Length: 500
Ligand SMILES: [Fe+2]
Image 1 (cartoon, protein in one colour):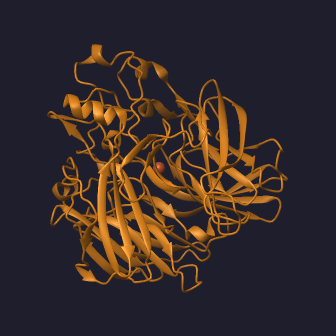
Image 2: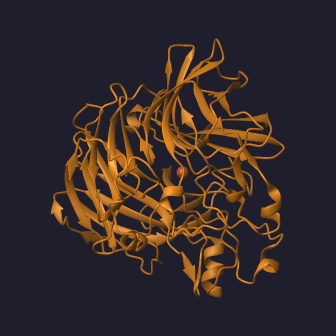
């Protein structure tokens, strides 16, 4: 399963479309603390904590399929690791819309990615209600597990049982109806204890961005996890779409892509809001560099510096190279990766999917210039570093990649990339396996940056169900595989929680 060779440049796709599309279905069961055994290998006894995954779990109601599975209701899957054992629990997030649609037995809301209510154009025109589907990410903050969707406020869940407590405003950090990013970042301890940084964006003709910094652990102070430590709000000219941020000890870094939003098709019900985002040459991409209140430049105004064009959703990491240079590694798409109204998520033409590059941008604050280098190209997503190296010059990255270097094939492999030398290695699940986001869990016994494990869910097309795969992070060898009694559609993001 391990290959250190280059990905094929123009080979034919090495997978069955039928097996790939088999992941698209509703999840019908909820499991509670079921003990699982490794089908192969063994679960490391050093792994102690919980892996949480989020993603869509309802894709069809009464014969109507969503336009895009990203519009599906959030399903949380939790794996509790202890003493070489693992237990599985999964629950839907009981959002208001999930309960309403369950009761009605049909879709009642439009989706951000183009899913429509039944009833034709008249049922959809000017219906601008937002369905908070709580399906994009899941993180632990204080006593709560947060199910996140960037168009609305978080839902708080019980970290053990996954029962939904309800919408949370994070002890007053948010106002009712405030959005909260689905991509918080954990500062591993640049200012003492671990912290969580996130943001609330109000896009418009001018955009407002609130940056929030919460205590995430209290090993070195008495401050309770979940407590808001800092917040600041800044106004920016023009429309902004921001999905992710990157964090260094002194800066919160945003990349406002050269994207515009065309409202009319959304208002008329012809497109979902996300389908109205398009790259444009009419505006300039910008880095928005916001000084952290806990850092050296607290209280200073944001720095705005022109950025390379491209559609950016996710960052890998960022770090400061001296006082004047910030390096930011980001995934750039050459056009929007969001499926249009005429595309079917179950029948995608992979050759038409956007090309992408992992780019390193070195931002020189003194000269206000940016130099760019391509670190990797080809279909890839879900980049991550060792979480203890967030905000530092991490040497290693792990990324989900396609088998073919060109085109937009499904993700079937995990790449370990040496950011200092450019060398890489690959673990592949092809031809029957389709991978999701790797979550890197550092070893507690070894200090090497690449010591630890990668935890990922793999859609196993040969048995039409999901496997939990544990890879050794250093050499990508397969440590263990657990065949789940669940068939989970392709998911989005997740996290590791080592707190009790
Ligand atoms: Fe994301």
